[in-house]
Image 1: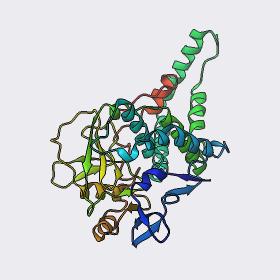
Image 2 (image 1 turned 90 degrees about the horizontal axis):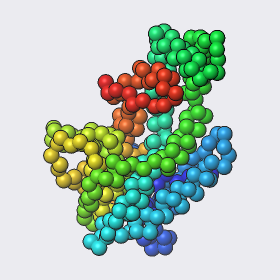
Image 3 (image 1 turned 135 degrees about the horizontal axis):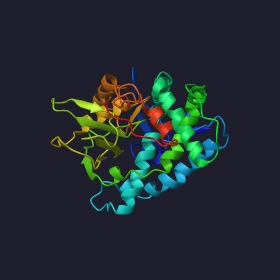
Image 4 (image 1 turned 135 degrees about the vertical axis):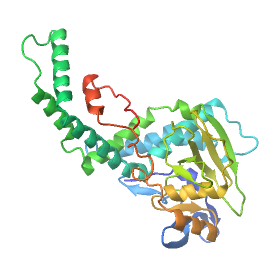
Length: 343
């Protein structure tokens, strides 16, 4: 089954009408290739097996169906109106767009490939725990006390060897392609059940472009940055809850949604330009960028910036936190996640 990473209706916003095929088409921009004028919004970002789960055969179709029904269709009802003077961004619509945007970020191929990075962090955390004898002994003692107090055992105690076996069972076959794909499909379900209040309660703005210098859209269309103090420099790929983060989603060639999540802000806000947004789109792209026009300037932007913000490598990495004690904290707190400290 071929799954959509960017919804067809959103891609159609960036399409032009081709009189020869009598259908909507996109100009496709790729690294080291000339612009291609005949990409179809229906198939442009479809990927075979994108949402498959190796252990649940029906999961891909289930996810595709839920994404369309619960997240795409509510926004499709007013997608073409966003940015118009008469558009009313009601609380319900903002909530629907917040969910749409969150899932749009998580369903990209770039996010799926970044699962490997998250697994590397987990493997590092487990290895750190297995090398720490004091932590292993402490967990064994904690588990023994819990069992004694619960009345489930009266004499025998949990040994360090049992704790080590539990930790190693987490590590067993963890960093495999099969496990990564299963983890990614499960992460989409978790994202469906999550509502980002920080994003929703932020400041929402609409940026405008011109017909001759339009916004483009990439196959990873939700981009983030922090504008740095040095003129013209950005830190790409910050999480939605990081200080000074700005979130962008082009919704048509003429309009881009610009959200300032409800986080700490220590920098003076500057008005983003169309070119800056397009550079970010190219930087986050995994395969292609799309536009309604052929443009040498767009092609230059894509060629110079394509793939600079690779998720899990140069963007949206999580190594800014210290995971050395994460497994210890989880095992000591009955499996509950404890946010690791920043380095």
